[in-house]
Every structure is written in C-alpha cells, then in structure tokens.
Image 1 (tube, rainbow, N blue to C red):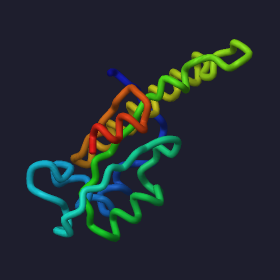
Image 2: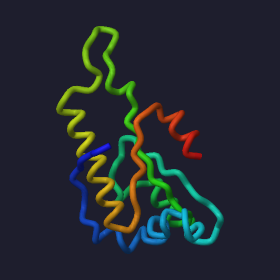
Image 3: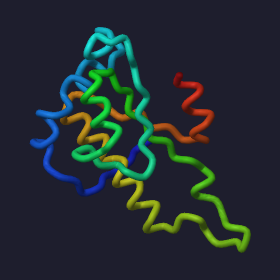
Image 4: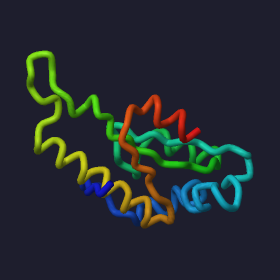
Amino acid sequence: SKKRGVPTKSNARLAPSLPRAFTDSNGLEKGPAGGKGEKLLMWFRADLRLHDHPALKYVEQHGSAVLPLFTFDPRQFGKTSFGFAKTGRYRAEFLIEAVDQLRKRLRDIGSDLIIREGKPEEVIVNLC
C-alpha cells in the first residue's frame, strides 16, 4: 500500500537516541540489537511521532530490536450506526500522509515500517 506523511521534528534529534534499536535490520538478519534476545513489535496507533514516543524510550533503555508496525483497521473506515462515515475524506488523507511520513522517518534512521490492512488483533498475531 502507498501511504503519505505527518509533520514531525527533524531526524537530527532521532539519530543519537534510537540507532541501536532501529538500525540492526530490525533484528531480522543479525540478531537482536543490544544482545538481550528480545524483539519487540512496536504497534503505532495514534502517536506517530518518533522524537518523544514513550515506548521508544523504553526500547532505547533496554536495547531491544524493534519491528515497527501500523495497521489500517477497516473498522475505522466503515459507517456509524447513523450511516455517517467514521473517517471522512480529509481525515483519511491526513492519516495516509502521517503513516507515509512515519515510514520515511524510520527509513532515514535505517529501519522501516510494516504497513498492513486488517484487524490489528489478527495482523499482530500473524506477524508474531
């Protein structure tokens, strides 16, 4: 799927604080970053920023490998019980741009973003 981005702070602030967790091929080829044997699935939902994300602070402190994930949940794009769209056109465009920008930011620091469409509870189980 093709997705686009959200305004965030400069990558210059990211490089010093997140390199080990995100740059070891996401822990897929060389083993987990930090040597603790942990690989964490980082499910991005609403907070798509990198520079001050609380979960990323945990990863930084514990030296774990990270697999970043975003899911487009079809339930967000359905209709309400009154027949109105749950997510309007402009909100959907903003979300697509935000996810694309998150992917670009992660790629800038040597990582990537796994993007899937489906119910997160099913997508996450399949990835694990």
